[in-house]
Amino acid sequence: MVEVLSARKKQVLEKGKDSFMLECEKPSAAGSVSQRACVFCGSRVVLYPIADALHLIHGPIGCAAYTWELRGSLSSGPELHRLSFSTDLREHEVIYGGEKKLYAALTELIVEYRPKAAFVYCTCIIGLIGDDVEAVCARVERERGIEVIPVHSEGFKGTKKDGYRAACEAAFRLTGKDNDAPVSHAGINILGEFNLAGETWIIKDYYRRMGVEIVSCLTGDGRVAEMGRAHRARLNVVQCSGSMTYLAKMMKEKYGIPFIRASYFGIEDMTRALYDVADFFGDAAIHENTRNLVSEEVSALLPALAEYRKELEGKKAAVYVGGSFKAFSMVKALRHLGMETVVVGSQTGSPEDYEYLKEITGEGTIILDDTNPLELSSFILEKGADLLIGGVKERPIAYKMGIGFCDHNHERKEALAGYAGMLNFAKEVHASVTSPVWKYAPARRGAGGSV
Image 1 (cartoon, rainbow, N blue to C red):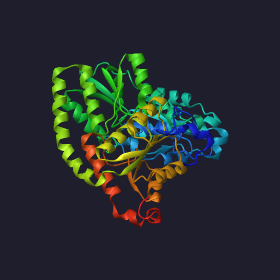
Image 2 (cartoon, one colour):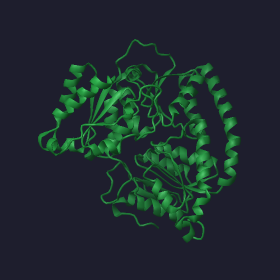
Image 3 (tube, rainbow, N blue to C red):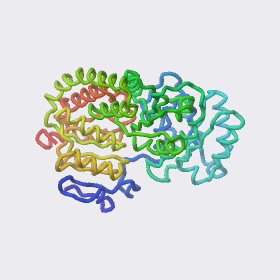
Image 4 (tube, helix red, strand yellow):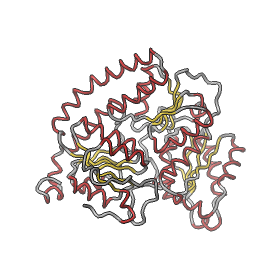
């Protein structure tokens, strides 16, 4: 068994062997070199896709570089979000304060780019030197006539999940502004869909074919005006539960909008997401449209998947992603390809999430919360995984282990959501797992041809 830090003993579980409830939602153990990002990064990944807003990072230039183009979020119009602006605080501001520099930067950028709103992200150094960011934002808002919203995302305040909360609080300030624009009686908001490689457009097309209107997508291909009328939707569909459930709860409390959780990855979860919305509205025409859509898409998809399954049957996979809902879908999607998940974990899962992972995985599966590279690579070797599904920080681990890799995090440029995304996923998994290059990897050669 892999040696685990004593502080993390309750965050690693082997199904069939361990009976305790996995501990989670706690700070990373000191010295573990966690795969998590900081609070600031958590807030940026949520708000970044709002394409007509200004995003200004108040802090050192390194924080801006770290989160520049951190999502593969596409826009159907403005692309202001793709520019990385920073106040570039240096020693002088650390000693004497950075409020004057923040005011000057905000004023100049708003005049130059004319954004519909502005977000100011507080980094670690701002929490230490005590700049009154709220006051500066309020002043610029009065002078320039647009919403200027501070995002309290000082990196040392907690985990990436605390950054999600800070982003939700900031986004909530843009809701409830528009009571006049027409909104359908079958209108929904999608929360936690970020239009990676155009996935929002795929999902919107499905709902359109059902007869459902997307009032607002928070935040994929997002617009400030759409967020202003989001309070008039009848239902919130939360795709990334780790990042956006808090916003859904705030909107339920203030506007009375119910919410459901959904995942747009894999056949079962994509289908369930569509039928759950149809069931909510209880409209016969919407139900009929949904049945036709699902039948058409699945009938075309299954034969194509069967071809990839021929060579993937019996292969093993490790999954480590940010949100646990995504991990659920990965386990099910891999099963359609004939693959077994032997290691699975997330950065932001809840106790209920990990209990569900235990239900849907096989005996001997390792379930992890907030893992680190040493643990993850050791479990990959122990369980003989042929594939690792993760993000940019996990890619080098897979290549060093000499196994296939599938990027399922927010930097990717290939759409993996929806039925079309499931086919893309199968193609990527097949191409990576069956690549002849792995037989030349030292890890493979040293183990007689397999990890």
